[in-house]
Amino acid sequence: MKSMKPLKQLKLSVPAQETPITNFLTASGTFQDGDLMLNQKGLRLISEENDAMTPSDKNVIDFQLEDLETIKVIGKGGGGVVQLVRHKWVGTLFALKVIQMNIQEEIRKQIVQELKINQASQCSHVVVCYHSFYHNGAISLVFEYMDRGSLADVIRQVKTILEPYLAVVCKQVLQGLVYLHNERHVIHRDIKPSNLLVNHKGEVKITDFGVSAMLASSMGQRNTFVGTYNYMSPERISGSTYDYKSDIWSLGLVILECAIGRFPYIQSEEQLGAPSFYELLEAIVRSPVPSAPADQFSPEFCSFVSSCIQKDPVDRSSAVDLLDHPFIKKFEDKDIDLAILVECLDAPVNFPK
Ligand code: ATP
Ligand code: MG
Image 1 (cartoon, helix red, strand yellow):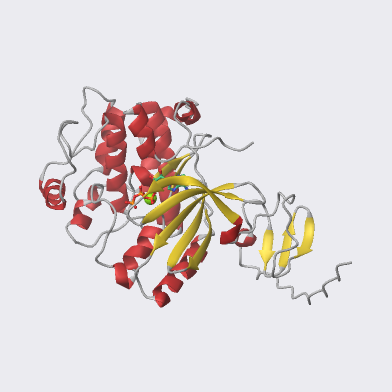
Image 2 (image 1 turned 90 degrees about the vertical axis):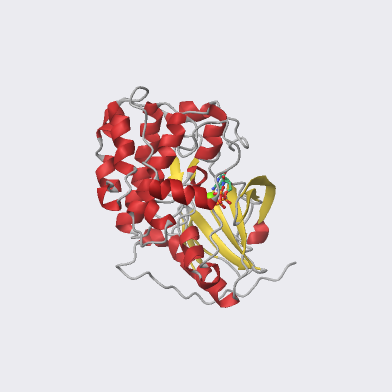
């Protein structure tokens, strides 16, 4: 008979009053602090080998990298690969992003530390980063899986998105931005179609918050921006100081692109190849700003786009103000269900029951 392990001494540490308890809660409603795990099934002690967790325990989601199995690669960005993974015991799907970082170990550790703080996202319009690991010179991030991919995937399939749906997308992105700007006091810096993710419920969430900011601020990466310059505001692409309004410019361009079916600085689909950095810089800083054609779009939509795409950040509206814009208000009580739009899209994988 297997001998019983001696019970460990319980060190019960209670979070201080001012710390919101939700900081320690996993998505499954589990409170975990060291060896102590508390969920709706009660209080339990977990040994270092996690042997208290069994496959049948659906309420506990604990992350060790080795507990995740790869289903397939779902995307590749400049910074790394994104895989669809499944928790072997619980069956939950996640998106695992692995970023190889060619920087000093100390900085990598700092980044993971900061990401851990960011894990406590409390906004339903920001993709949850459940866990981050630093392993073998790479940083692995376990994200909430958004099963309809990104807005880039959506427009690749549907070409253009109609105004009522765009208003619903915009509202959710703005709610995410209000959270990032006003509560977390961070600039996203990389708002673009591939960082706005969609799920089968029609929810739109901002991702890569923190990642781009941290990559940008980590010493080794300061001059090596890996993403696209397409959505960068004039002040940012020209190297001036920038603030939250830089994200608003990017949102305006993204929404206009979704409406007209092409990146607004490209005149036609026939224009071959992506513009070079210098062509973009020239266009964004010197050319007149792009706008929605008044003969094809409602005055509210044209005004919304123009409230975002202004060269001088002072002239751009804030995320809070834009939530009250007539374009957003116009469709608010119309019960527009984005789930209907994404229903017809190719689902990367069936959502588990
Ligand atoms: P870049 O690296 O230039 O910023 P990117 O945003 O496309 O570009 P990644 O962030 O690595 O690069 O994402 C690649 C793709 O993976 C995205 O376009 C999206 O389709 C998919 N993806 C990323 N995160 C998730 C997620 N949480 N759920 C589902 N799909 C995701
Ligand atoms: Mg991304």
